[in-house]
Image (cartoon, rainbow, N blue to C red; front, side):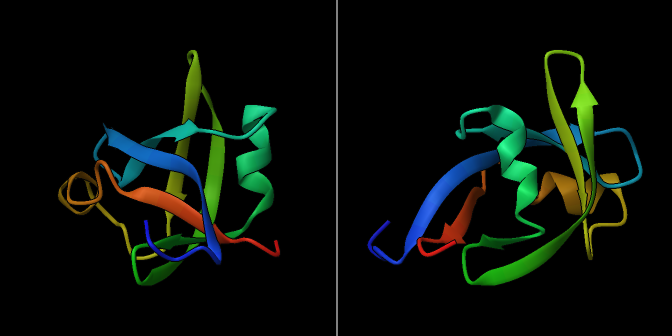
Length: 86
């Protein structure tokens, strides 16, 4: 990650269910702080976090523009970035 204006705060995991939800790995302390940011950067794309919740031992999130399992699967492994000043 060459852009020092952005900080990696998490990573998207596998699709969860068929409606576009994704597992989320948070690198923040406490982990739920990740969801205080309502907009995430995924590479060059900015997405809005529509919903999030605890699921088992982790977290899941629904992002704008991700309507089904196939779309969610294409995002697996993406870094979640935010602007450093946030």
